[in-house]
Length: 287
Image (cartoon, rainbow, N blue to C red; front, side, top):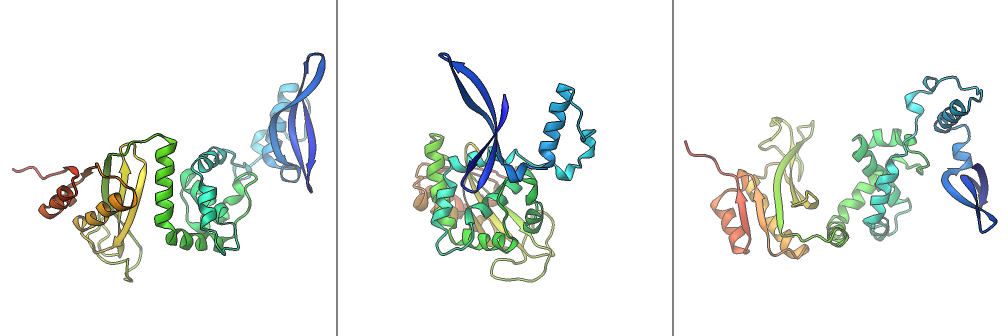
């Protein structure tokens, strides 16, 4: 095996290559792509790799111990698994449709936020400051993260529908049981607006404004869609919007609604029955 440097365009790339013989002819096959040479040169992660190889081969190096490299210098390669899933769901194409007249890379900004949330949830500022941990991930500007959120909000319904149908086809799903639940998210603020308002807080923050979040998931726990409601909305009043979402946007007609007792009212149960759905709802035990 040997390290091979190849040039493509204006960049050079490093590869781990194995030589083998086939029908008397020496051939090469690439075992591992290390990436762009300018990215890996003097990179701490590759110094660690060199240290281990040197240790195994008893070659002296200038790097004495792995402790010489701080944790902050270690790059994250694990995000590549999420990148594969991201591509399987066709998100680069879907976000490309929402890219209209956007001058920055919307898909890259969204991927950075998604992978950061999956690995270690942080604020958008924290995501921006920590993005160098991800090996070979293109840099994203902080204001592009915030702008991406506005674009996602405008494209929410079309993205949800596309992802639902792609997920159904990808996993060969039959969606006939849907779980619906509602929770609240509070803000460390007392300023009200069209969404943020005072209401019953499920996390005991009744003295701060909040929003009500309703989530629909299938029987495997995969999200179907969500809705945000003003903070003063009662749980039971969120159901009608959820039912309309199921029937009109996703074409789901045979449904069993499973929900907590916040949905359990005569009017809500009538709405469920009127649409031909079944239901399983929690109920208070009589003393």
